[in-house]
Image (cartoon, rainbow, N blue to C red):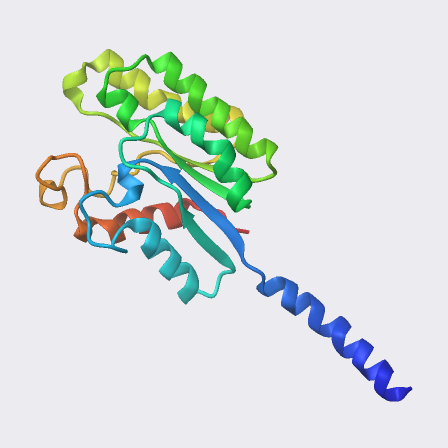
Length: 202
């Protein structure tokens, strides 16, 4: 009898600790900037983020579902399956650069990003939106409206927000690959640290 009671009490004490150790999925849903284009395997900032979370013993498992060349239209198509497969608790949404580089309508990009945010929130996950910018040669009007979309959506849907992923390296040309668009391996820790600083993983 006493032994059975002890086992029950032990289990009740152990269960909350076991639940606390359960990992939640942090889904990164982006384009080549998050997919590690042109980088050695496991050198991208999402992998570094997983390493940092593991070092600090935070119960998160990073799943990187980013695809190089992805537009927001492609993202809308892929997202439902990704949410169903991975069941994330939080999603880092990093898309739109390829829309801008192709000169696609900003209104369509905004509509697609908004739809993805709503899909993520409807799934029960929270959103961390990452803002992007495009080169100034696209014209002040287009580039200004492009950058403004992210802040607008972050405010409207009350998401987490990193205003500009490449902010730590934008003026350091040696931290970009030969195409002038994709960060080098040496730049990845800086990107990871920026995102980590803004993330709310409570």
